[in-house]
Image 1 (cartoon, rainbow, N blue to C red):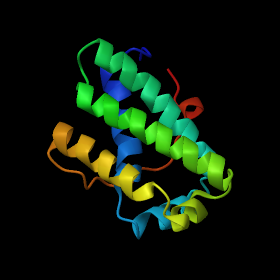
Image 2 (cartoon, helix red, strand yellow):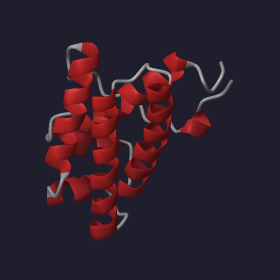
Image 3 (tube, rainbow, N blue to C red):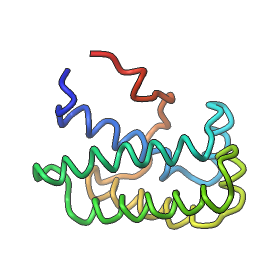
Length: 131
């Protein structure tokens, strides 16, 4: 597999968006089960944004989706700065900005797939993916 494989990039995008778009009752449970920090979510968003920028350059991601991902990156970054890098489940409880993140993630998924309700993935990091 090559890093520039659109299918690989699309899967990363959809996995993260599934988590960000999930119902507010599902997100803390998933975050707790996978012991995800708010910083890790911000890192994942930044990673996926970089992939998305490459997809947009090649015409495989809509400009509106890229705009939404940039806004998600900004909101998540602000939340981590404001609330610290603790547990994502705790950050979700603060509510600040997460409803907008959820709405934007859902909008991207609906535009791309026609549906926003996707199964929540097992957490993997870029380091877990091998050629």
